[in-house]
Image (spheres, rainbow, N blue to C red):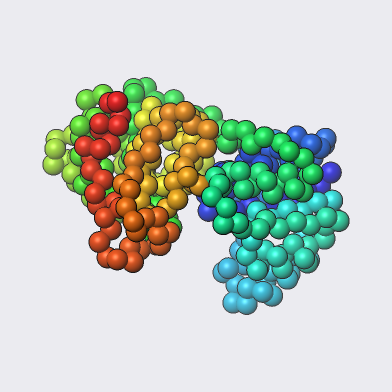
Length: 308
C-alpha cells in the first residue's frame, strides 16, 4: 500500500506526530510511505524502515508558490492514501491535487489537549479506530558519551519570547560543571546566543564544554541529544528529541501552552514556568515588552528542581 504523508513543518511538531504515524503503520501490511515536508522535519525519517521516499518541500523558494505546489502535486500520484498533518491552505491545495484515492487534512482545534493527542485523533478519525498514542519514536542510535554529559539548548526557532536568558543558562551550567561535561546546542541562527554562554563559561574558568551551535546536521543533533544524561532547554524541537529518548530534561516554558506541547511520555521531565496573567500569550515577541514569563525564571529555580 502506497501512502503519502505531509508532515508538520517544525521539528518538534513532526516528532509529536510520530505516535500517530506509527499507529497508521500498525494497521497496514507492506506499507510504502513517501514523506513530504520541510528540509528540517524530513530528517527524522531518514532511517525509518517504512519510509521509501523523502521529498523536501522547495515550493516556498519559488517565485510563484502556488504554481510550484500545483506542479509538485501533479507529480505526487498513484497513492492509495494521502494525509497532511498540516492545516494550511497550501496543504489543502496539495491534498486536493495529488493523485491519491483517499485524502485527509488535519484540522486545528482550540481544545486544550496535548498536540500528540490532536495528531493521534486525526489518524484515528481516518482509520475509524481508537488507538492509543504511544511513545515518540525516532529511528536512530544515541551518541555514546564517555563521561556524564549535560546539554543546554538556548535557542527556539519560533521566536525570542520562548528563549530563556544566556546568562542564566551559563549559571546553571557552571554550577553543574563538576558533575557533567557540557554541550551547547543551537541552529545556525543561534550561534551568537551560544557564544554568549561560552564566554560566560570561559569567564568562570570552565573548560569541560563543547559548543556545537551551528555545527551539527539534524541527524547529528538528534544523536547527540539522545545520548545526554541531562538536558536544559527552552520549549523547542530539541526538547521533543530528548523526550523521544526519555532524557532527564528541564523544560523552560514562558509564552507557550505547556499543557499542549510539553514532553510527551517522558517521566524524567521537569517543567519550569511562572504563573502570570499574561501567559501563555503565544506570541513570537513579548507584546508587553517586559518578558517577565522568562525573566523571572532564574538558574536557582532550575538547580533546585534538578536537585529535588
